[in-house]
Length: 121
Image: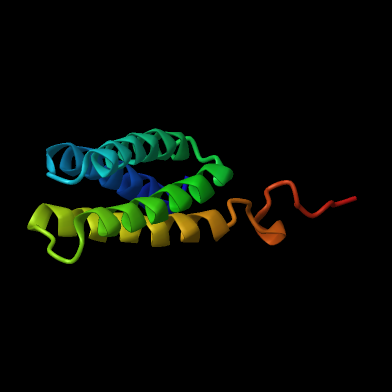
């Protein structure tokens, strides 16, 4: 696993944990409160799967993070506390990192492949 994928998984773990905590502690409406906690837990689970290097899990992590940002902004409105602002910022960074990790290739180029050695006859 390269550093981009590891940092995307770490940002997802941090964003999900922070969203779960802040969603639980916030005074948002009951539906938004439960939805934020559920999205945070789902993001933590998906980011844990991302640590295994499955490429498609990064697409799910990006989608969950984007949904988390949208629900957080809709639930909290324009007056954000410091913890809520940090949640939105980390989740936004998680969207970007997960998309970049999804697009990155994990295969080695053909010139660097150790099986591509010259044959001496």
